[in-house]
Amino acid sequence: MQGRWLLTAFCLVIAVMLLFPVSLLAAGVGIAPRELEFNAYPGSSANETLYVINTGDNEAEYRVYSEEKYKNWFDIAPNEFTLTPNEVKEVQITVSPPLLSVGDHAVYIYVAATNPSPQLGMGAGIKVPVHLHIASWPLYVAIGMVALLVGLAAFLVWRRNRAY
Image (tube, rainbow, N blue to C red; front, side, top):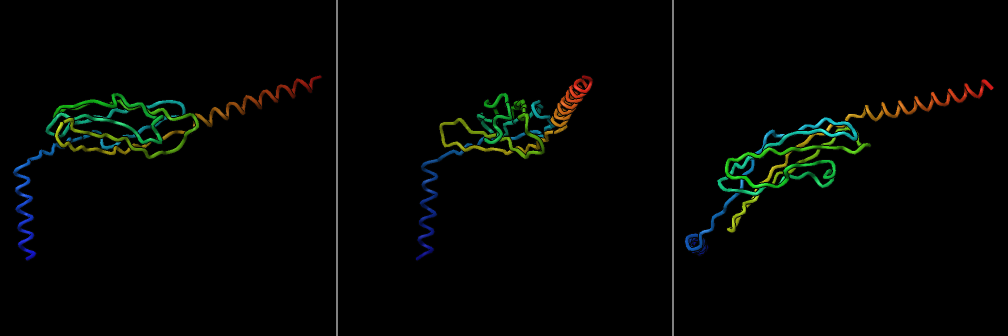
């Protein structure tokens, strides 16, 4: 009895697929390089280029964006565009870390593709690992120079007061 039920269900699924064909058009996405690395100083900026490739068979719309936590650190241009099959787009990514940020940060840039077809469309996406190294020496140099100037000013005031 169970075998007959499975055969009936299988035939029904095949009949539905033949009567109502649905094309699933998936957008494809490729990138180069596989990961990005930025070396920057607090308050400065650094640039890298990411190439986005349409690896699908149809035109697709793409969106490039960073993690929500770091969205104010990144400028991505262009961040939305359309590509035909096998077309490549150069995307400029600029990172500008805040003045008081230092150290290493592991961040992701996302590249999402969707098929603009009116039929059932599927998308694809890639998480691009980003290593962000923010060197701290300019901050320490600035603090040291301020301390040196304050010390020099204090010494000059002390010397002047001692002379009287």
